Amino acid sequence: MTISTSRQLLLRIVVLAVVCATAAGCASDIGAPDTSGGSQMRYYGGPKSPMWRAPAEN
Image 1: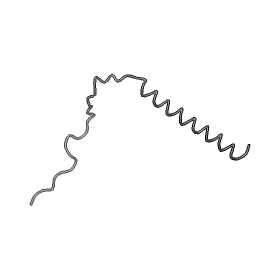
Image 2: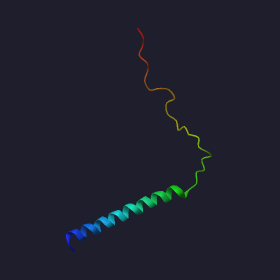
Image 3: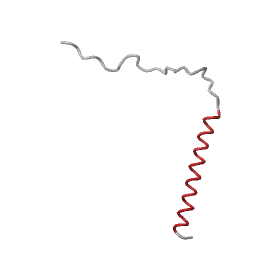
Image 4: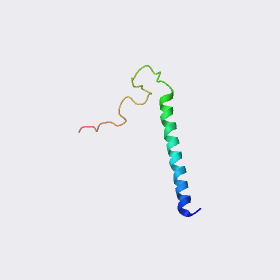
């Protein structure tokens, strides 16, 4: 094998791996249905007010 043939083979393998990874990602998005009950956003906690205080007026 020459160097250019080896590079072409390596490039084909990399391209094939990228195509397979992309297809697997798309298939996983299609797989499970959304059972969260709609498109409402969920609140997971955290501060309900800003972490900073407004500067005191003089």
